[in-house]
Image 1 (cartoon, chains in turn cyan, yellow):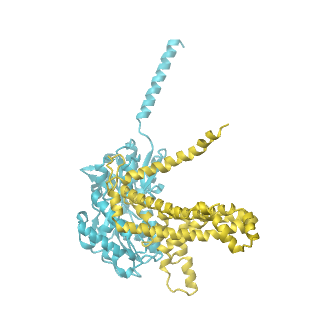
Image 2 (tube, chains in turn green, yellow):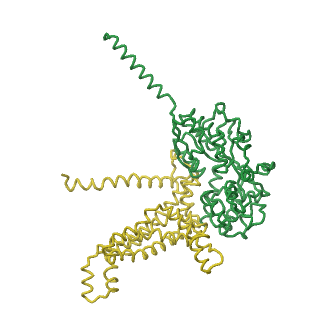
Image 3 (spheres, chains in turn brown, blue):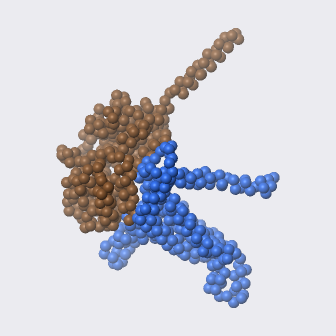
Length: 351
Length: 286
């Protein structure tokens, strides 16, 4: 090969290499980091993505509360996706921490009920993907406690040493708001002071405040330590499967309901892969696993419609057409309200 | 070869760097957070306007201070109990075990092979309504209903933490007992001192540095303890550390959590310094 040709070939190869490197640099990374709650990293809960994208590694970091997850995102977490629950949507949008989801690229989006989609919309944009949901109500042992018709069962001294409240200030405020008929988004300082005194008086009635549903609460319900508890329906289903005589109250004030959401971080440079992940999270097998393994509701309505298990039908109130009419959906509250409520709860704990 | 001047930085440098990175720097961050006026989730990059607001909240909340006092008393009781119970163990290993000392020392360290959480969960099984203690008392006909106070109480936290700390406390006591020259005990015996006098006048004073080290090794971490109270303390067994953990975790209110932590740290350091001054080791240590 003449020297000039060799130089041309060398030049062409160099140019091709530079172009390839540039292309690679511009391409999206094919890996994801998800800021999750412990337990959801199990492959069962992202199995459809794993099957379709075996070569795209997914790693997880964990938060222990909604506040913790928001704090991690605020502190500059490198997570591409994050998972949080009702009431925190606005903080992510206001903080510029989330990017809009292009739902036209989600093949399973049509399986999500409009009411759920609406909950993930802020300022007219679909920032969040609804994924899991459930109720909060009173779980009680029917051998020890007559029918519970009000949230005030949690404050009933007849069940002293056998009550378990969730260790969460905002939840305590929510319960008190229901009992008193107050608007929880407009709690005054006087009302908060009254709530504090009521929960201080309630404190000795508890066996313990629970933090982990399946770690703390469910075993204590099943072994008879706890008769009356603030609980999600997952613990109810777990107790029913174990043959424990329990019921899940329909309080006159209404149950509470919550939804879990995923958001794509505004800093993520794996947007397309994150969309694939979200789409797969809504796929039938993944969502069925949420229902069958965690006993949580799924945002995929096809999966919910296919439930035949009697325990799950009971746990989700599927046969009760009026269940949602008497349900209070967790409203958004301000950062100042949350701080005041968590500080109130710390004072209750310290007493 | 390195001279003495070159060896010292080489020996001291790595641990100092390690401490600076993993202790001093985080401590400075905690101080900085405690001086932020905001409540709730804070971005460290946000402008920093130092304020004592959080300290005002801590010191102005009697319930927080009461819980700190309760936690200090619990830590004191646990440290005293663990040290007293560890002393005979260490004494046995140092003076009586002889050729089997290594075997017994290994047995003493066996609990460390299991995870801390696992050991606490085991206590939950032992103390629970259907646990070993209640079953035993019930089958002996001593109780008709399970005793609730065994679990989810301050007593449960104390019992469990004393158990957890005994092997830790025994190690510094053992080290100080092993350093005692046997000739000193022989001299005391030659001078007519009986076993109790020898222990009281020779062994105990000479082992005091290790005994005090054991006490502080237990007291200092216990005052900020939160895992054991969370798992088995119930609402009555909550300690000050639980508040700190809650504000850093669940509540996401790092500034107030940092102020709570700093108040505890300052009071603990002051308390330890006063205690060390009261017990002048130079007078009793060899």
